[in-house]
Length: 160
Image (cartoon, rainbow, N blue to C red; front, side, top):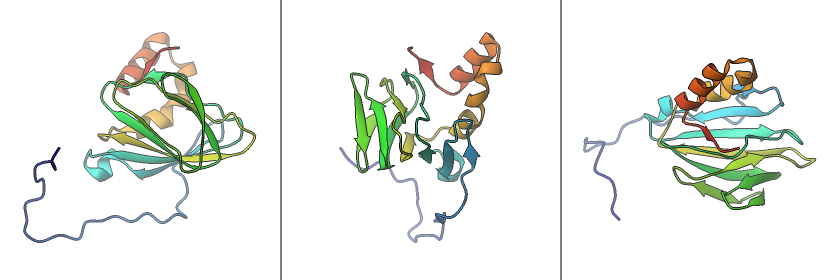
């Protein structure tokens, strides 16, 4: 394995980093009380990856088993206990635990505990997941056709 081909061609570096202070409020709070912070979006990384922090209240639940055809998804637990499904079994993931789900890999996650949980989700390459996070709570009001179109648009294929 080797490094990818150069994508930056100058002989000098440039000032282009971006900083996000921890005290910036979450961009989204869902119906369950889950807060989502857009740490690095596809737009801000030029499509390289998307990184999001989810803070779930106790017993917040989570999505059913699904997979993606275009992106991998990784989970890193910051605090609390998150139930992760790796395609074979559910595990109680705790602070410092990590799960990588390759493209096509079955997975699910939820907070079933009586305590809040916080974790990072990394999508690679980047995908515009912000619209998904912002509208997934409205799927119950969509027609079956609209719901199917929404999930196809956002590369989410349910198995349950």
